[in-house]
Amino acid sequence: MKKTLCLAVAALALTATAQTRNSNGGITPEMMTTIKGAFKNTPADKAIFNAISNNDINKLAVNTASKNNFDNHFSHRVPSKGITNQKSSGRCWLFTGLNVLRAQAMAKHNLPELQFSQNYNFFWDQLEKANLFLQGIIDTSDKPMDDKTVDWLFSHPLSDGGQFTGISDIISKYGVVPAEVMIETNSSNSTSRMSNLIGLKLKEYGLELRDLAAAKAKPAEMQKRKTEMLGEVYRMLALNLGEPPTEFTWTRRDSKGNVVNTKTYTPQSFYAEYLGNDLTNNYVMLMNDPSREYYKLYEIEYDRHAYDGKNWTYVNLPIEDIKEMAIASIKDSTAMYFSCDVGKFFDRERGVLDVDYLDYGSLFGTTFGMDKKQRILTHSSGSSHAMTLVAVDLDENGTPKKWMVENSWGPGANGGHLIMSDKWFDEYMFRLVVDKKYLTGKAAEVLKQKPTMLPAWDPMFADEQ
Image (cartoon, rainbow, N blue to C red; front, side, top):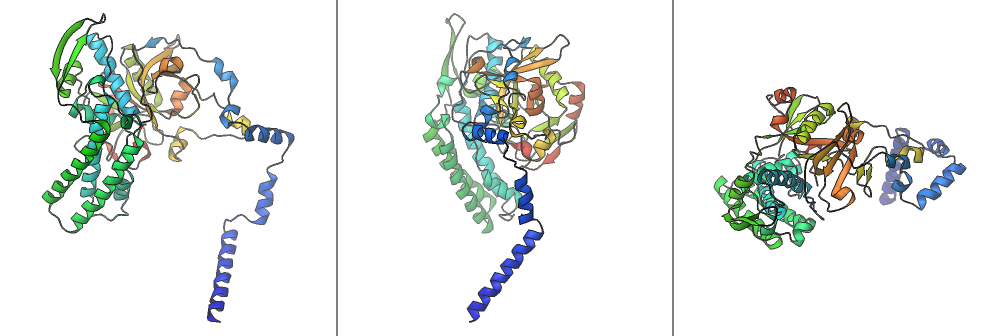
């Protein structure tokens, strides 16, 4: 009897709760009548349904007229040679950075061709990121598991993605080697399985380090155990990627294939001889983030690839200011690290990025009206892919009409390059790394500010892949 009574009371309570939800925002029968009335199922609606139910939405939304607006002529272009292919990996940031440096080395030494080993730098990137995570766990071991930073760390133990901070942190410390010195493997070309397994191991290690801290382990004991953990990570990386060389012999040839010299290098000495750039101090990251105040300097916590690296700082500027410096760099034959939201309005077949390419509004009889600021605030758009900015097409007044980037997806349309309209550049470009010598006076002044620190989970931290 008591059980029956309890069930009846519970049912009444659930009914009352449901009625409260309905009266405070649930869909009521009256609302449903209004909602359904919005769909008239006219002959046009039936035709659109038939089309959409049997076809790819993107193909139906193509604005055919926009295909007439592009050619592959550019008034100013940085010389480049050779297209790379990151394959099924998130290493676009690394390919882009090395492509920028490759162009510099070839121009500086008049080399007929040169490819750097992405696999070599990726090995050290993964090891350094593993240490960044483990040391971050040690640093936050006095905080609860549901602390925002601790939660973020366990959610992001390792990634194959990144940005220019990785170029700066990893190459400055470990140098570079030619591609033939440490070739690609299946796991470097298709990184997800390896990275997921190492990430799972790191989470296990993170919990162990927190247990050690809770047991009042001494700092030296914590560091000793962390080093042992990193030894296991190193072993997993070596089994997947091969062990990085500490020394190698390389033969330089001229444009006719004749031998110039044969020398023995370390990765650091090779970098010093063929590049020698101060990646930490000579380059500036420019950001176009209209959701935050312009002419301000920002820094994001954990926005680095090595614990002893440097959180990158961003000069947030209007898009017109960034274009001015980009044009100056291209005119001086200097390619740039460039990142954007590549998946938006992308005609992959033609290798074109154009906001007029897809017309979803006409297809559905509605509007999609958010601006760039609103898309950032609602997590609808953000930096997703890095490429190398190499060309701009200027009209007779010096106004850009279109831009071109060298991509890392292998040969394809435009010889492996993507062409973007200037309007697309405005809406979906986010980051550009320029040599300090191309900074305007106003941008250089911003660098003198004390940066505003943003948390690791800030939308602008997003890794490019």
